[in-house]
Length: 146
Image 1 (cartoon, rainbow, N blue to C red):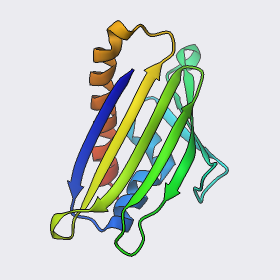
Image 2: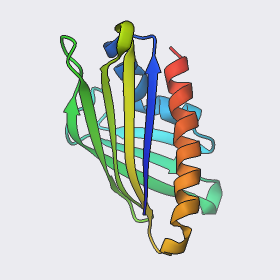
Image 3: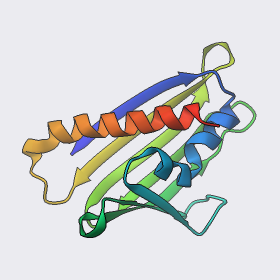
């Protein structure tokens, strides 16, 4: 199991920051070899399932994640989304939080617990490093692109 924490402060209003990190299909645009589908289609709400399909051909797997908390930011209050991973390969959860930051900026806090079924705990350090790299890069790209 790997726990990761990513924090970014961006010169964007809360609602735009939230929009950029929760338009799920965009995640597929910024993570290599990944396509994202959403059931039911937008708008997101509790019960929405976001499915990331990663890999190539027979080496692909699906990472279905169910939205269990959906609280968009309103009137300057923080926003929070929690996704529970429900797949056969990838397990755990992710929380995406958007808060007011210094000087009218927004702060994004991405917490994730990720487990790969049948992966021995001896690989937790490698899993943590690779997840921080992949998700950190994805988050940076999501926040840069309108």
